[in-house]
Amino acid sequence: MLPLPSQIRLAAGDYFMHGQDRRMRRYGLPGNVCRVALRLDGGLDTDLLRERVAASPILNWLARVRIVRSLPLLPPRWHAAAGPKTFFHEHNGAAANGAEPGTLPPAVAERDLRADEGPALALDLVRNADGTRHLVYSWNHALMDARGAELMLRHLNAGQEVKDPPTVENLINPAQKVWNLSKWWNSVKLARGSMEWLRKSGSEPVFTLMQSLRPAGPCRGQCRLLSFSEEETARMDARCQSLNAGFRRSNFYLASSIRALHAVAQGRGNKDEAYLVPVPHDMRRRGANGPIFSNQLSILFYRIEPRQAGNLSEIIAEVTRQMMDQIRDRFPEACMAALDMFKPMPLDYYVRHLGQPTRGKFASLCFSDSGETCAGMSQLLGGRIQEVTHLVPTWRPPGLTILFWSFKGRPRVLLSWVDDCLSPAEVNILEEGLRAALLEESVA
Amino acid sequence: MTAPTDPKTIAEKLCQFARTNFLADGVEFNEHSPLAEVGIDSFALMELLLCSERTFGIRVPESHLTRTNLVSVATLASCISELARGNPSVSTARE
Image (cartoon, rainbow over all chains, first blue to last red; front, side, top):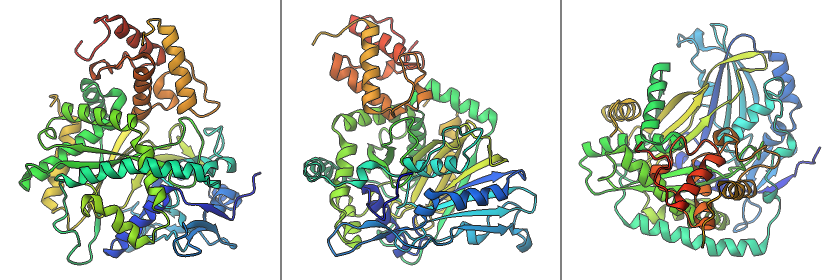
């Protein structure tokens, strides 16, 4: 087995996520902590789960790492602390306090995890009153991305269904272990392009849901989960095909989200401000079992003008065109090179600096499609998986996140927003608009 | 640049590009592998289309990104080959 390092570089995306964490806490929001909750039937072998968790070198290393900066203006690093901290917790369900069966206890749903203090991850097992179990994996987004979390679950579930599980060899991206000066200089040159693009895009009108850049007081994150029946899923598939987006399902979801946001924006009288949407893109090789650790992401930015935003076909075509242009111009690499170059900046300055091109607006909406979660897994350590739910925090800016994922081919959506950015009536408009865009019969 | 019209040659180049640029080592992949099953998403698809542009000088229009043309590298290569021949009968979204 490979020895795991005691120190390692941060990926560019790690420091970006750490910056978002700082920004959120400043406005009274919980940190940049993501969760994935698996609802399992009573067959889960709890003893086996405890054994796997205790014996996992991956989980134990991840629970020890935290972000440290040894000297000002030196890039921060992940440092593995000597002693592991407790990260596996067991709870009995919330029935006792009158909550709905299956509701996550506040200790789990609101668990705070800090990347600079550690542990930056937690695993909670909740025994619900109805005999089902919730296994909730929570992590600070600086530590890993959603694909890393998915690989983590596959690592835990090694066995019959997961025949080739990720191992410790898949934990770390080898490129993160070394620092190459010539590559760094090339990155500096590459980074200029992305900054110029952002500055130009940000100088043109961008729609934002925020009434003011700084909230008047502490704000609260809220969320709503959308599910779809089998019949609705079939309609969505047919609609996706009719829009010629079968292979570009993410683009269909993105177009639907933009059209729904446009309905809210029109209610606010928006005529000229474009919708700027950053979309994370997984940089791992397809079919790879890793890396698990760090944010292996890049970002594509889409800018959709209001005149295009009412028509799904037009949005999909425009997104495809912009995607091609950005890949052709190596924008994703340039964007990450820029973020990598800014890592030595103190965190507060870094956060301010990244907001400059868009004058603090950052984006109109955050969008992500995690794709199929727990693909090919019907059970986890003996417990049949009934439901998979992703819970992600909303960044402010922009104040709204729309996340898609699917389990056993059935899509689900998380609408997550900050309460000073959208009124309850606007959230209803957003949900209705999104459902209509995904499901309606006529192609528009 | 003269575009090859043999689908086999095009498919070989596209498979080689996919292996070099975005497929993990050890992933079983050939021209008949279903694209979706090896994890090729919209981003990887765009990279394949850009490879076609750079290598063969053939731009695949949006209307040709149909389910029929995107089953595997072999079907995509057939589409590119038809476009290279200037054949309008290739599968489009307007069918």
